[in-house]
Image (cartoon, rainbow over all chains, first blue to last red; front, side):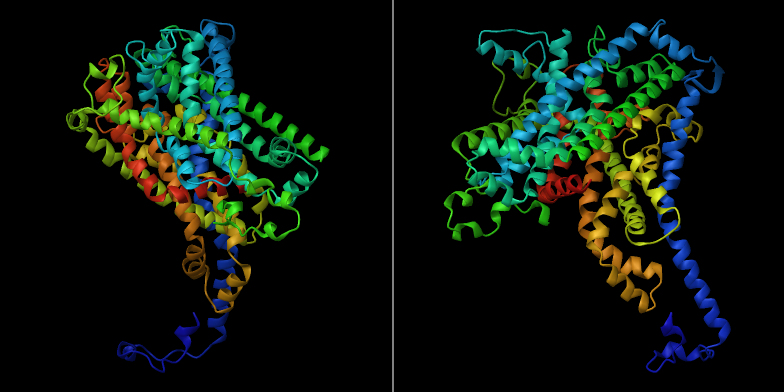
Length: 334
Length: 302
């Protein structure tokens, strides 16, 4: 630093004991420029190093290790003994003894994903459009819509499990008011999946609405003015101005929600209470996430659980690929 | 935050224009009655389950499942909360709340700090391999935690960290989302001239980071901090696996214990849900506006 070599004109009393500053030698300035070079060259790597260390230790290594484990038989109670079984774990899932559960879980992941993602995003889009109007209490409405985001999977699911409880649940009471029901929500395939998707939708609709709202406010107002001059009403403006302008954002939320739906775990796990770890009394809402947990941490088959995880990984890669293709096509068409 | 400024809060410059119709375009519309009703219902649907948690938590095990269901709070709230406080998760909800605060706090401080540092490097510094590294960060955004839980479980067991709070902190010391979020913010908010000026004045990297980067990044740090805290507090899968059967649980593990146990005393379960949610709702009530801004900001640029 420059100040350390400058003579201490108004230095404090303590400085008196230190030796006088050495003359500006060639060696010192060479040292300083070398320091400077190290600083500019090395600093960027030092700054990004923590991320890559954490990623290597807790992201990449476990991912590869999961792949390796998926070819082994590993017990939950003796994790250090892995026995090579080749493709057996995958065979068990696709055609073997647990294939029934696997295909069931794959289907459920898909149906639950559609049931929770599609209404959620459509409603979010509509709500964002309405929030974009001039409104009184806009701040309150936004905060209210986002409040479910602040609740955890656990808290939300437990409360909704009570609402959908077969005895004295509020859902059945409301149905009763209309002369319908009661429905044993947890027992049926569709009723249970409907209830679970209500929980997911409740937690995430407001979040997505705010994302859409932000994108809507970035749409240039001139576009609306031009459309209005052409005689387009609000609905037509929404269809022909808002939606096209929001296309990248919509794609983004579709991808994020789809990835989230593929990993659905907490909601089905807690909705089922005692039978949650297997996705319901009859596996009627068992997802791939639940299957992985059940195989690994209830049946003690960590290798098979790893195989499920890698199949999920493959699914996500597929989703990413489809996403990339759609994005490219959208760009090409513009 | 400019991204959250509602378009209609801007001066109505269109009002001076000759065309009255143009003035009513887009965000300039006043909401119709139908729009207000729909939004009101949506807000009600969002808030009612929270209100009803309070109602259910203040009844007893019989009243909570009676028909018609209770719609006003009863007199058992304190009793239920006390029971949960003393019994949930083995050692009570107090321990669980403390654990969750410790974990979420540590994760938040570490994620925010490291994200600023890496985000700064990616936004403003030149170095070999930067593009490849940034691509790597981006590609890990989509890799979910579920893929790694089995090996992480084995790893933590071998490290002697099973049932230890450290197992919840280590894997999320810094996240790809945080790095990316900070990079996006700093590449716009941090003027390159400011950095150059500091350099000319002879400041080394540490000084630049401490005296320039951190002050500029402060608003984004607050947003990322809140998002990280909420996420860490609500994390479920990994704590359930690594802290299963622990006598030292986090809030979510304690709640899962209430929900999957043999007893289904709903008034106690909802009291637990209430207690586990209140801290976050409090954070939300205090900083809600910023969280709203952060979500919209992160999404716009992500």
